[in-house]
Amino acid sequence: MTKYLPWDFPVWGIQARGVLSPDQQPASLEVMARDYLAEIRKVHRGGPLHIVGWSLGGMVAQVLAAIAYEEDLPIGTVALLDAYPSEAESNIEHPPYEDAISSVLAMAGLEDDVLNGQFTPAALAEALTEHASPMAGLSSDAIDALLVTYLNTAKILREYAHPVLETDVLFFSALKAGVGKDHNPNEWLPYIGGELKEIGIDCTHREMTQAGPMSLIGPAIAREVLR
Image (cartoon, rainbow, N blue to C red; front, side):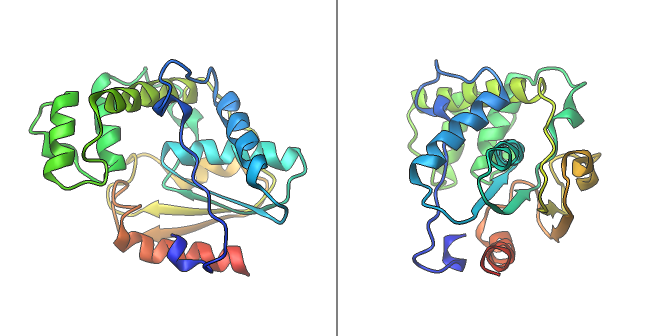
């Protein structure tokens, strides 16, 4: 996305702590969001704070933005990429281990069929390598940490009720096989005090962060950020 912003526009990515320290998993979504916000404050130098999140990261982005707003940080664009509120899944049981494998594949933009039915860390590592993923070459420890982090995040998401974010939200929906066939962007309406502006992207949930869909998403976010 950075290619669609001015060269000197600061962009920071936040990585879940559990990826490097799998034994340090947050106890709640609020704890995670406040930890992220503390990291943001270390580099934020004033001006509006723009927040973007995809999938589970979008759920965290909404909470982070709401906390930042309550703490009087200036909030600019909040963009959610095919992410839906956690309460929409509150009646779903804790996800199986296979969902964690599938989630890591989604991060790499790959579909489950590349595993040939073998939902194991070894098969996952082999698929990442065979398909020349940027994630290829991850150690077994790193893959295990990703899986543990996903399962913990999925757990705390199902235990959390979103706060109301008193700003507009830009929502990008995957028009082909989104994150869930029964999901609707309007699920966010109880948790958004501003306008929910939806843009449909002709892709699947897993494809959303790839170059093609991002060629549409990036400019749309840039227009919001720079206006």
